[in-house]
Image (cartoon, rainbow, N blue to C red; front, side, top):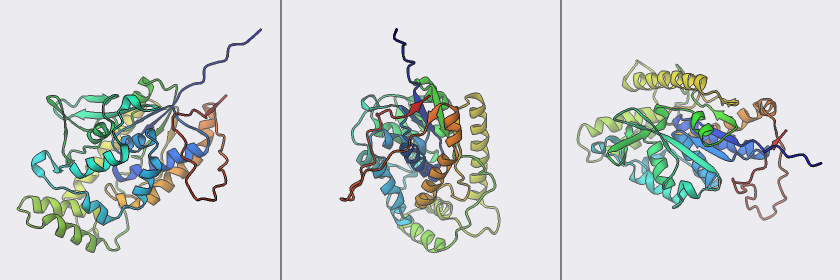
Length: 336
């Protein structure tokens, strides 16, 4: 007499917001893949949406190369100051980069289920973006207020989803995940500052010079403040950006804790990223390493959920071509 096989639970990954610290998501997804854990559902907020989208279109290796090679000067080239657009940066250059990375794919065409979050800047409502052009959805998901201009959606304007749902466990479950692995990069951020100061004065000077050339006030002052936040400076007294960033950290961490209590994941991964500043996107290598380490530490929690890590054997590859980036839609997770 045949016994009906129990359907394999769907594994979902919820990637949280956190600006530059979000490069850790690359390490998390790669470490899970090495363990044989391929989620069939991926959701993300803010930077988590970007990394998750790259994973969904099988471009995560490309994103990793871009992130690891990112320099302060590369960041400068992405800046297009236009305060009248509702943010310090217009985002056209960033949009071109997103299209180069993600192509013309729509969310409906992806081989895995994907969704991201945004916030209606007028009502504060949380918006789930589950269909439509992928690059445009990610642009809305990462539109951090005051930095990147909002994205028009009909008569409304959408901004960064991390404002309302920093780790989208609820969206992951709504898309069908039975087991949710959440990645929180907002933990232990309050009161922490990066201690790296070398070359910052010159980098800040270069940025200000490029941004403020022929720039009238108040844009010149805005550019200077952005440069100070981007590269930091020795602490002498509490200033505008110190107050703003500390306030954002407090709100983000408390909101994250609240949402995670309301929508508890089955496995919570929290990379140690307190040393990486909010806009230090040039420190991808450290963040990626932290993500990989955090997954290694979470193996007992994965096993407790019936996920038996099955490390993949990397094939010999004398040509040096990357062969580890298999189609993300392939389910290889072993469930007991």
